[in-house]
Length: 535
Image 1: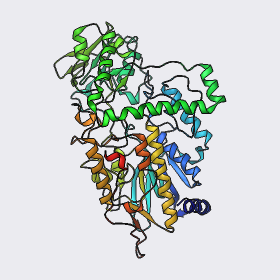
Image 2 (image 1 turned 120 degrees about the vertical axis):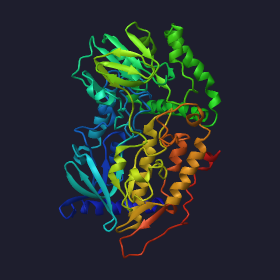
Image 3 (image 1 turned 45 degrees about the horizontal axis):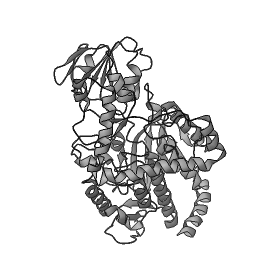
Image 4 (image 1 turned 90 degrees about the vertical axis):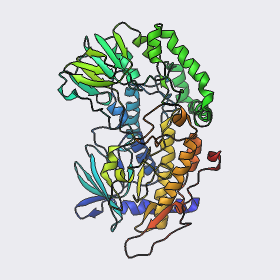
């Protein structure tokens, strides 16, 4: 297997260089088109170069790299995963300034990765993808962008689930005379000092925004539909001695990363198999609240009624202290209506405000990019997923040949770093491309519906006993039908083993019309999870 892949790598390196400037009519043609330049897209680009593939482009709708870490520039924006775990294993950063890094440092890291691995010649800025269509005769994707059309043998969609903000439909909002914006589209030209501000939502963004703007605003009204569980954020400055040690002895940084990873792997069973073990964590969260919130009425508003972990556990050491300040009102109800400059909660509470900030999350289970992907049967990915997102090993979808996604269905995490999952999917992407080269000629791989179904049945069976499904909450992890299509119900190690190589038995090999088709392996597509995942 290893010799075959190594031989194929050398063969395709020369072949792809020769085909680099191939044209299909007037359209540029590339071997691989990557969509998005966040962690997933940049990681894919690095891996392609390391695999010897240089005939690729990265299509980015904005004018710079960074993805969600470019778009989310709100006050207080930071990561809730430790810095040394929230970075690529192939691009360690010994100079993280804090144990939990801010948005500006993460964005700078991604710019550094872009330059270090010489990715800029491959990136097409201001190329928003408007439509992708599979051409079954040519066995390639036709990609329409705001800056022109191109074709690609393989598409790697790395748009991410946190890229398109979700704005609720609120009666009267269009007539509001003040400023309105989403946390992911922060209006930096608007001065909040002395203003009356409504903050809608209490998710991961809101608990960072509230303490950042509370000292500046005249009055802050927080609309809370469901209170989050909040743990102390053990953030501190990383000392110069630590950074020097990591630079001089890189193994120390690897050990640090390994310890952070291992601690989170040990926590997984409590989330996935034994939610009742989370009671101790709940007690710590309640103690964190009690330390800052002395008012019993306010404390009652802020105490969740669901099991901790059902929604993402949030980290903050200044959220509760900010809520206790005299210029903050907590409304234990969602925003229901806007009447002029008056905002009205579902429980009837009213407040006069100058600005409304929405921290209402993103289109996660209904990603807009899915409406722009048309597969082999002439239907969009959104239509194919209208009963719920599902894919094979979080990467490929039935009916969409040579199309892959990074951070696909059921690859999210509730307690660790998504970079670990991204790197696992990059392994799968690399082997997918190797398999195409080994098969040779014009060829495509299409995930068998039976394999996709088998994989997802196993995932959903495991999901039934997790805290995300049994914890008594409604979260963004669930789709409109209440099915959890976002979270991975296992460890990152399990997922890495499940995505190490492509199993051709799970795919149909497609040749151009008129040529024979190869059907390797069983046609049933077993899509087995690793043995330890069935426990």
